[in-house]
Image (tube, rainbow over all chains, first blue to last red; front, side, top):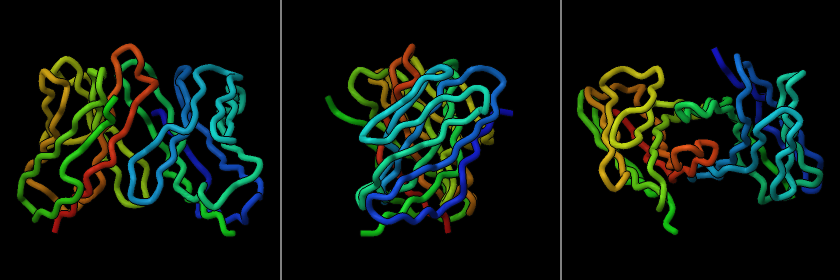
Length: 112
Length: 113
């Protein structure tokens, strides 16, 4: 069945370091891909999305490119801040039924 | 424009009891999805409601049921609670035809003892 796999956390970085969180997916068709962020004690917020191959989603300095050939959607940021500390979830969606399929999440901790 | 709200924020129940969780969708949204997020895991899709009917269901037993009301708000009911039902329950609202934009509420944290 369809699934999403993320790199295991926690990921600990110093402020201004470069961030990569790996995400790969298994899908029978051509889903849309998402990154959501969850801050402590809160629900999920959509960070960025890409709806077709080679699309790049970007928001708040984060970006990810939909790579069909490698079935990947890795999240990157050039310079992380302490305020980026959160859990990041990669997800896929087929438009029919609205069912989001999430990875297990990757916790990011940024130290000053 | 009001966001997605959920109530209660926290709840403690014992095994065998029943629970009802509530969700008010974002203004203008007619579809509500429910997810269960166990500690340290990603959310798992429970079901979705559109026009007051279930419109897709994940791998959850029938003791998980729901309702959607004419104002598009929704309830999640869980009967015969088990310890493994302890989790954060999230609802997400969206507009039919635009499922790629789902707005999540803050969640209800349920503890089953």
